[in-house]
Amino acid sequence: MATPLAAAVTSFLISFLIIPVIIKYSLEKNLVDIPGRRKIHKKVTPSMGGIAIFIAFFIGSLIWTDINYWKDIRMILIALFMVFFIGVRDDLVPLKPYMKLIGQLVAATILILLFDLRLKSMYGILGIYDIPLGLSFSLTLFTIIVITNSFNLIDGLDGLAATLASISLLAFGIWFVLAGDGVFAVLCFAMLGALIAFLIFNWEPSKIFMGDTGALVVGMMLAITAIHFINYNYNLPVDHTARFTGSVAPAICMIIVPLVDTMRIFVLRLARKQSPFTPDKSHIHHSIMRLGFSHSKTALLLGAVQVLYISLVILMLPVNDNYILLIVILLSVVLSVILDRLILTRLSKEDQTV
Image (tube, rainbow, N blue to C red; front, side, top):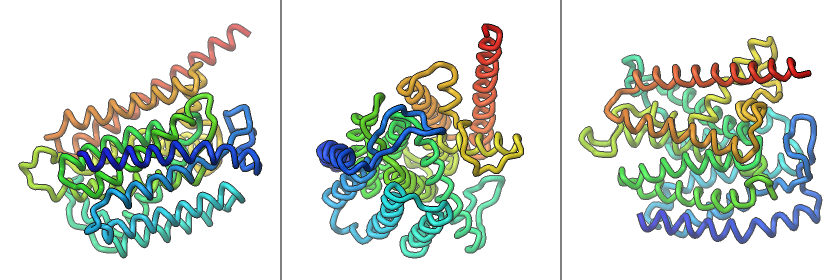
C-alpha cells in the first residue's frame, strides 16, 4: 500500500503546484471557458486543468511503477496521451464530434491490439461465457467509448466530475491493492492524487475547469481500469478474499453515476423525439440543481449515490452478476423516477405561486 500512496502524494504535489501556473497563464492568454446558453457557470474560467492532471498522473505513474512493468503500462500511457492531445486541441480550437470519436477509436484500438485489453467473454451473464473474437473487439471498443464519453458528459458543474472520478479510482485502487495488482493500484492512486489537487481549485466557486483535456483522459483511464478489473477479478482464484462472484456488475457500480446519466438522457431525448446526441440541460446534475441544490451540494449528493452503489455491490460480494445487474437496473430506474417526480412537483408548486 505504501507505493500506491506515494504515487498519490507525488501526483498531488505536482498537480497542486502546476494548476496555479495554468490558471495565471490561461487568464493572460484568454484560454478560458466563456459562459453561454447551456453553461451553468457565470464567470469566465480557465479550462485547461486537464493538463495538470495528466502531467501529474504521468510523472507519478512513471516514478512509482516498478521498472520491470514499464512495458506493461507503455501502451496505456500512449493511449491516454492520444486522448490528452485530442482534448487539448478541442479546448484550444473545438473539434468536430466525429474527429474526437475517431481519435478515441484509434486509442482504444491500440489498447486492444497492443495491450490485449479486451472483454474476453460475457462472464456468465445470462449464462453466456465464450464469445467470438470479433464480438470481443467490438464490445470492448463500444465499452471504452461509452465510459470515456459518459464521464465527459457528466463534467457539467463545479467539483462533480473530479468527485465522482476520485471515488471510483479510490475504490478500484484499494481493490487492486487487496487483489495483488500493484501496477494498476499505482495507476489508480496516481490519477487519484492529481484529481484531489485539482478538486481544491475546482470546488465551488471554481477557479479552473478540467476541460475535455482532463475529462477525456480521466474517462478513458476509468474505462481501461474497469475492463482490466473485470478480467483480473474473473481470473482470481475462487477462494481469494478480494474476489467478487460477479465481475461485470461490480465494475459498473464503481462508475455508475456517469453511466446512468448517459442512459437517462438518451432515453429522455428519444422520448421527446429528439436526436440522442442533441445537447441540452437534461443531465442528472441539471435536474438536481432545479430542486434548489448548489454545485457543491449536487456534487456531494451524486458522490454519495456512487458510494451507495459501491457499498451495495461489496455487500453482495458472493452474488453473481445476473442478480446484481437486475437490482442495479431496478434501483437506478426507481431513483430516476423519484428525481423526475420531485422536479415535476417543484415546477407545479412554482406555477401555483406565480
